[in-house]
Length: 131
Image 1 (cartoon, one colour):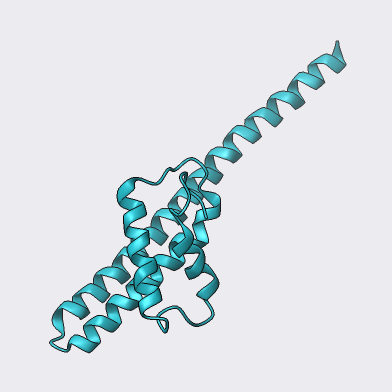
Image 2 (image 1 turned 30 degrees about the vertical axis):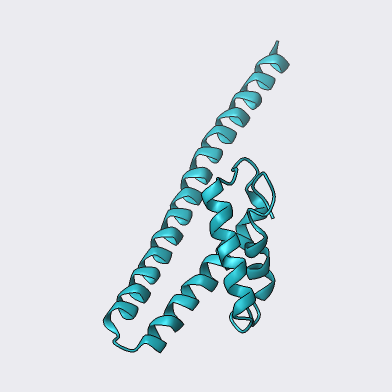
């Protein structure tokens, strides 16, 4: 009887620890993800305002290309983790236009992030989401 009570106490404390540990861990990770998304949004707002405020078309195009590369990097780096999302026809059209742009401007995709940017270009090439 004493062993049974001891076993129940250990099992209950283990279950409570697991439950609260997962809850706090998920809350913390969710807060980190939200913070990263907000930070990225702020960077894109700054870049857009910079591009909109410039009367220099060359500078504006450069900022748009940086945003293009950033978006491709984001898609390429996360695409392997997304298993349930399916591309819409509009998504496939967008990525086909992105591939056409990258082929017409080969200097756009260069540098250390080229691998992820290329994976981003491959997104939506298949019927279901994934690169």
